[in-house]
Image 1 (cartoon, rainbow, N blue to C red):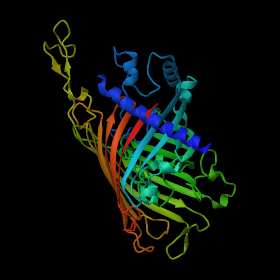
Image 2: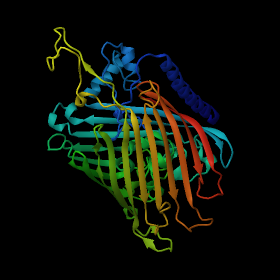
Image 3: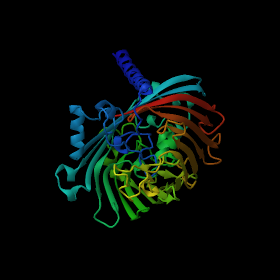
Image 4: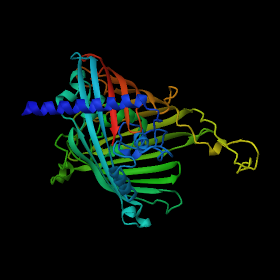
Length: 503
């Protein structure tokens, strides 16, 4: 029976992988223009949320296009027009109920590592749902209230874990998907915003319930394009406290916008021992344990500035934040064995679009009477710069430094930094493709342990080929230096590809 189950799982993986490749083959002969994926589609590792130009939304249906073309260039595999199922989903979304989801699979070919060479297939499924009460009950004043829920499945099989060959520190694992395997309810709760009732749109946003702190703070969309855990998820903070895509807990956040470009965000959460244990999945909410004497409080705060620089309105985000992870009953231990109340740290984020390609020049065509509707001139007139849509193509950078005092034994990484570059549309005629590279570096506590550890670093680069509006393939490479902090573990190299489909 076990062998049959394994065979079925393997067949499913290959079927999904082959499906993604077939979609690519069809795309290569299609003359329809590729469209980016919508930020609210549920796609992960896509750089499709946040303040940077990675926030790319699918346009409305193309005028004169067939139903098949609108589906191919649309939001998702199960979205489009002209099909009763698609139309039903679209009607439900307009009525306030929105579903999202995506599948991602990655082949990791370990070509050189501590344990040699071998291939691994890792994968995950994500699903989400939102319910807007104003649209559901047709009450305008309630449109600021939304209920949400997010769910996930990650493959727990040993054959999906490339880190068993590389032997890197868990924060530097080749894929972040090895965190929190099996089925998990990642989050559910309520969100209330001020919408347009105050001088600044969404001047405050209040969220509460079963939340993921890592999704609430250090929002760095372009880092999600990468697969390794350090850059994509942990960002140094996750090496010292529970802070990953798999850590969920009870809590709430309040985001206050002081200006269109300035915000302050605070969050308070429940902290508890063994927060990332494998038993903390499904409905096994460890934070709800009756023995509350083992529970503490986890505070996180952040303030940020999101400017648009120069004539090209280059978007950026600059943020400074910190945290205190409380652990009652002396569960935090200093290096000299003295119990402490908790751990704290700080971080600084700097994301900026560095260069934007010029948008194609648009013209106003004269009407049949030979005069421009706008100015009455008898010739074609160039559109004013303010009326031209800014190009999405260009070069972006994202950067982060995190640091934590070295007094606590659990602060494995007192210093960490990451930096990356992403170019949208580098290759002519491939305006939606992404060329990307990043580095993550973490320094260990000096002079601690035997042998003493110094650093771990990872470099990852790749090219995301957008197949159509809702699928992509991303060949990539990874190189790990000092995977576990010493020369005792050999440096490792990984070559592979990532495939994704948005539902």
